[in-house]
Length: 161
Picture: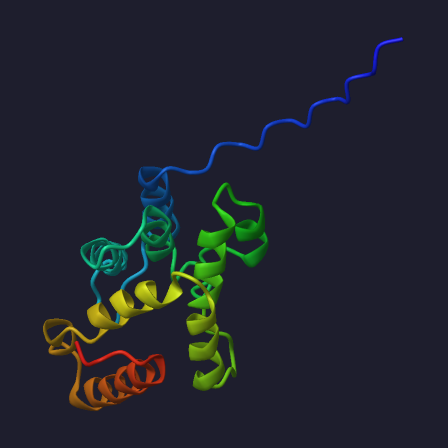
C-alpha cells in the first residue's frame, strides 16, 4: 500500500508589493492632514523616501508607509495581524506605534529591540523635525515638538538631523 500524501496547505496570499502598500497608506490616510494642514500622505512619502535614502530595505520602506496607520486608527492591530505583510514589517509598524500612556523610555526601548525599526523612526523624526515643516507652526508648538523630538533622538542614540 502506498503512503498517503498529506493534503497540501493552501498557499498564503502573496505579500503586498511596495506600490500596493503605498496605495493602501494613501487610501487609509486620505482626508487626514498634518499639524500644518498639509495632506498627511506627504509625510508618509517623505518618511518612506528617507528610509530609502538611508539604505533601508523594501520591508523598512513598507513599514515607513504604514508607520502611523495603527497609531492614528487608520488600520487596526487586528487588520495588521492578518495583513499580507511580512512579520518583520508588522513588527516594525507595531514598534513605532506609540501607545496611550506609555513612557517614552519604553517606547524607544521597543524600537531599539525591533530589527529594522530604528531606521524607520530615524526617517520619521528627521521629517518631523524638518525646519521648513516646523516653521509654519506657532512658536510654543514648534518649541514643544523640537524638545520632544530631541529627547526621542537622544534615547534612540541618534544624532541631531
